[in-house]
Amino acid sequence: MNWDQIKGNWKQLKGKAQKEWGKLTDDDFRMIEGEQTQLIGRVQERYGYTREQAEKAVADWHDRNQ
Image 1: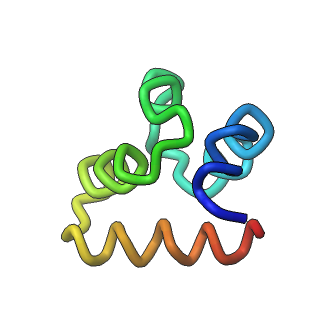
Image 2: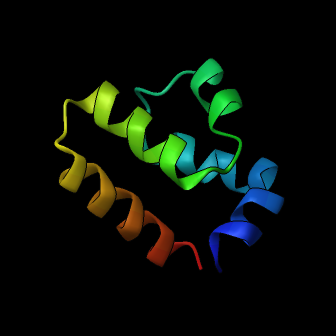
């Protein structure tokens, strides 16, 4: 599944993302709206990850949810 598909199916995938990143708020998820860069930025901010760590975490989540 590519990011265009994730964006299109965000309402369904949001639950999986919420389970993965419990520190993200409902407002965070509304702002993300399936955008990869937004998700990376929010994960980086909430978890104190480096950009690379956040990118890897999001990529791993993406790979598991294809």
